[in-house]
Image (cartoon, rainbow, N blue to C red; front, side, top):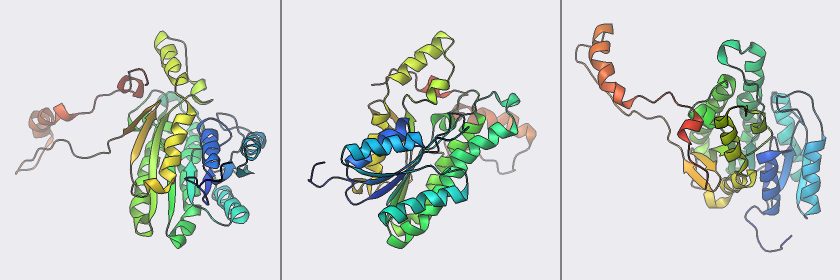
Length: 307
């Protein structure tokens, strides 16, 4: 690799779910920019079953073949013990931890009235609990060194909405709130936390239905958007050039980078006498209705072809 100084030289980064897709692209890019990378991947199926050390080790082999530095880890993010072991791999192998990319994920899609408890819990455990467990395990090191950066993967399924993904949407919107809380709580220690809502082809996206013409067109759009485009933004947010950016949610869609809105009041009404059911129906709701959010899904909001 080039001996010239690179953006991530000297930094140690953990990337979860790094055996495939966005996680793999991010790990490869970070290593190419000089980081030492813990490539974490349980090696489970897209729905979370099984385990296989192969995907993580394969990415490590790609990194080392290119002259980079990496180590594989196959612990699960879905338990505190697994998350601690992931961070300890960085400490034991490289002596420090500078960044965390919470990317690990599974899907258990089902329409809400048919979703069972196990489908709900499995997705919450990996996405939301996993992001908390790994972030919490790294937090004491970030605090003590007064530096560190988190990048969490959220989704427009949670930020906007989608069919058949109540578990996934709830977890992903929870991750956005988790990231904001980390940013607020740890700002005094110069620790940053941001989210990315990625659009990119992956094995999880490949499980989405493709029966109707609209679904087929949506998948064609997704296939044109590459994990490497998301990885560029993730790597930037971990680097020193983004040291003043925290608490934000970015969407990456092909070559488009968007900053997403966060909930704020958009309209209000008041009554000196207070409200009851009748006055709410007669006066408050008609006045507020113009500011209601439409019941839309992510594909209806992002309905143009990616750039």
